[in-house]
Image (cartoon, rainbow, N blue to C red; front, top):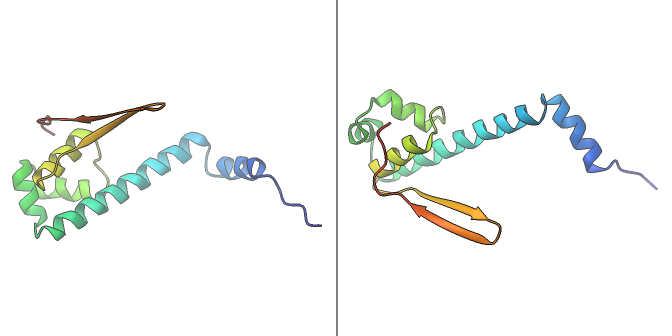
Length: 111
């Protein structure tokens, strides 16, 4: 019978090879920011808007919009302004065990 290693033992080695838990968390955060930026860019294109259009609506440069879409700028306030420029709004969900609160912002601060 073949004996397989336990996941906890395998994971520990993989995490160590990746630089530890903190490095892994940072890599995950960067990857998610890239995915989010890509999805925002897809939405912009679906709406028929250019980066210049969004930049004008946000009051920022076209290069700033490009940074957002590449996931290089991903703070909540900046993403909220980008989403507003596309005609949407940000909703933040706070989860406390079984209690879930959806927080809706009115206006967002400037980026």
